[in-house]
Structure formats: structure tokens, C-alpha cells
Figure 1 (cartoon, rainbow, N blue to C red):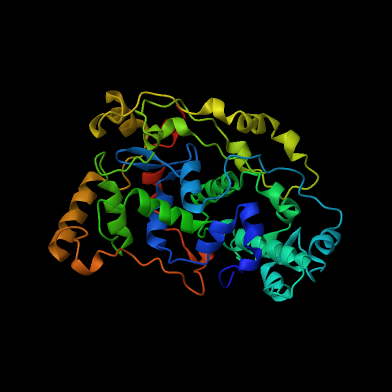
Figure 2: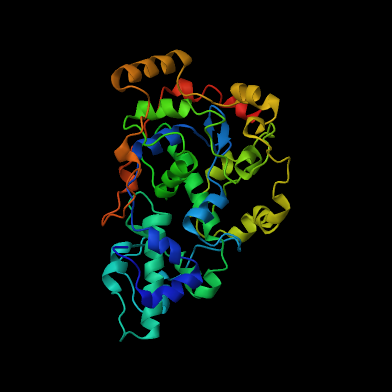
Length: 392
């Protein structure tokens, strides 16, 4: 996506549910150090971030509020194998890419092949361009791989009919893919991360922006700032498989947080990739697809929060300090860094008059590449100290 979408395909993008994200998804400045600090706090066992005041996570509601993708729809599944992807492309694009590798094509081919329609374009040409544009949104912004230049043609099979495409839950796919990528990024041998990192950044700023005017520029300072999060400072706003464990983040939905049940162990599921051909995924995931179909039965109905000081049951905090990972740094190290910062530049994150506008989120012509983000990690023994306790 090198520019805003043509108004000639606006109706198609609206039908498919991609108009809003097409207007905002042309690139924003990523805060790579903030993302690194958040990845350090991500726990694959629970799909939550661990902060001193408890757990929080990106929810389906957050995805809908920020991206406005279709959420309450059918699960996106089906076989990813095609006997002839060239025939599929010819049928839906009237063109065949030179290189199709494992069902993936280069997005550069899409840009070079489909020029923006004009008033003389036929309706069929506009439809083909709209399909190519949506594929670029998916492969370049919503679910990019580390190359940021390849997109899987399995998404094209869902764009045969735009009205039918709008009935799918695209938001849940984006969230599950982001969960999966963050889980992979926590591995010791993983140094890079892809996927919709702008969603992660905007979520962090939207949920945690009230306590500071601007983020520090040093990774260690950001870690310390997260370690200083308190209950009063936190905003508890109301094809692959990743669990959406709402019982661990009930405060984000306005409910009082009890001690959650032990998370479901999905280690084997994390090893599964959709590149496996000839797999009947609807049958393979039938149990979880049925859970999605019955999603209204899982809407949390708990005791509402009546005051921020009572946002969780009394025993939750002591439980979390034992079973969670509330701090990356030791108490001694946190106090030492805090003293150094105060001596160096005064109070942490002082608000200046010229900072009122906040960080720039203006679109850039060339969005930063997610694969350029290198994950920074604290000492491995610190990160893994409480890992086994989470499964108790």
C-alpha cells in the first residue's frame, strides 16, 4: 500500500470490512524499544502481559476499536492446499504470477500488475484491483511475515465475494496471529518479530497513556516505567489457534479480578503451522471452532468494579506476586535506576509544554519494517523464574 485507496473501490472495501484499516494502515512510526519491553513481559502460557499490578492483554474488543475489522463473524478456516494456484490467480486476477512459492506470492507483483482504476475502468477491473489491494493490506500491515514482501494466496480464496468476506471474523485472525508471533518472539533463539506491531504499539499507548506525557527513549528506562505501574495508573478499559483467556484480564471489561484458573496447556498447538498441506483444518480444529460458534456463552458476567481500589479480590495481589512475573528487575536494581534517572534529568517523564501533542503518528510514505525489530531480553534466569508456577 503506497497510498490511500481509490474511492472507486470504497464500496468493495466496505463490504469486505477493510475500509477503515485501509485508511489508517499506511504506516506509523513504531516504538521498537516499547515493543521489546512488552515482549519481555509476554507469557505464552497465558497470552497476557505481566505487570506489577497484574495481567493485561490485547483483546478482541481492542482490535475492533482500533482497526474496526469484522469481529462477530464466522471462523476463518478451510484447506490451504490448491492443486493449481496459477488457475486460482487466473480466475480471480486474470493474471498469473511468475513465482508462486508454497502458495505465497510477492506483493511487488500485485503492485506492478494492478494499477489504480480510473473512470474508464470496468467493474471487473475494479473488483480485481480491490482484491489485490486487500491482499496488500493483509500481507503488508495486518499479518506480514518477516520478509514483508510475501502474502499467502489462501486469503485470496476468502475474497471471491466481498459480501461473504465481510461475514468472516478477520479481527480474531489478526489477534491470533499477533499472539502467535509474540509467543515465538519469546524464544531464546528468536531475534526478530513480524506481524501487526502497530496494533501492539497503539494498544500500549491507548491503555497506558495517562501516567506519562512521552515514553523514555532508553530500553532500561521503559522497563523501569513498566515496573512502576500501579493499580491506580492502569486503565482497565472496558486457521491457527490461540486462546483468548478473558478470565485473566477481567478488569479490562469492568469486572473484579479473582484468582484465575490454571491456563490450558497449548504447547503442542504452538508447534502446528498452517503450511501443512492436505490437512482438513475445519475437522482438525472442530472443538475450538465450536467454542467460537458458542462465543456468547463465554461472555464474562462477574462482579463489577465499584471503585479502582477494589478492582481485584484481596487475595489476588499476593497470589500474583508468587505465581506471576510482576517485575523484570530486582527491587535493588529498580531503586538504583530510579536514583540515577532523578540525578540525571529530574522526575521520570516530565511533561513539557511542547510535549502536549504527544508522539507523532503521522503516516509515512515508507512504513518501518517489523523484521528490523530486534528483541532485547533481560537475564534468562529472571524471565523464567516463575514460569512453572503459572501452570499450577
